[in-house]
Image (cartoon, rainbow, N blue to C red; front, side, top):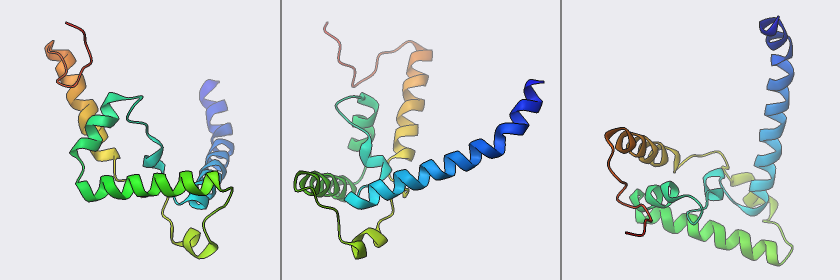
Length: 122
């Protein structure tokens, strides 16, 4: 019965997820952001470690996109339509490094060792 309901509702969920992704992409394009720019390195230490493994040019581009988005938001403006058309909100640059860091963290937990970037008071 559950499998039948799953098959029955799957097209609806697929349609809704595509609509949601398109809506998120529109909002990100307005400010010139990519989805990976939304990860906060102050909130998640894995993100901070993954960012430290990226090339400096990629980190600088990320910071420039975030600053531009904050500036546009404070001015209550959006990017011009020409620039919005050039934006690629779902071009991933952080996912591979983040997956690698999470895999290393999982491996360290299995081995029983502490993380090199863990915030623990001795």
